[in-house]
Image (cartoon, rainbow, N blue to C red; front, top):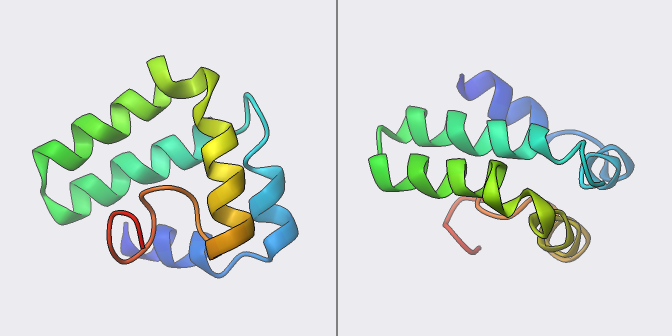
Length: 82
């Protein structure tokens, strides 16, 4: 699972931006769930699930901003909001 997160982190910026588009942003939601499973943190998994289902309507905007300014999607950096 760590390999998936590492591969996502090493993707080119244009691919990360494309993955932020509505309906495709579910990919980042799945990555958040995987990161929660890797960290073995229930709170992280709940946050990740909330970004997939009810948050899918607006989370892509936040992911786009995070990718353009920080290089990774929301909640996928080293720290929660790094």
